Length: 174
Image (tube, rainbow, N blue to C red; front, top):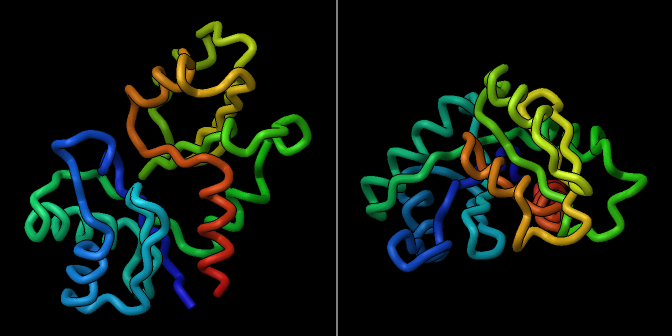
C-alpha cells in the first residue's frame, strides 16, 4: 500500500516537458523506491517511502532532472494528508462537476501576498478557498478560459482536478 503521493508540476503539458510514465516508474524503482505506480500522464506517482514528504519531494525533483532531463517542482503528501485534503473540501455541497473543481497543492503554506491577491481578485462566478497548503478552486464554467485558473497557475504548486485527487486517495488505499 502506497503511503506517499508525489505530484510533479508541469510535465506532459507541452512538447518540451515530456516524461513517459513507464520511464518515470523505472527510474524511481532503480533509485530504490518501492510500490511505484503512476496515474494518468500528468505526473501523479504513488510510492512507499519512510522519508519525510519535504525531503522526498527534493529527492524526486532531483531524480527527475538527472534521470529524465526535466526540471519539475514536486509536491508530496502522505496518504493521511491526502485524505484530509478530501475531507476539507469547502465546495463539496456546490461543486457538481468534479472536472471543474481543482486543488492546487503547495509545498508550504502560500505567501500572504499571493493570498491577498487571490482574495482581492474578482473571479465571479468562480470561487477559491485557501486551506493550509492547498487552494481549492471551483470553476463552474470550466477551466479553459478561467481567469482564476490562470492566476493560480502563475503561483507555486501544482493543480489536480477532483477526479484525480479522489482517485489518488483510492489508489493509495490499495
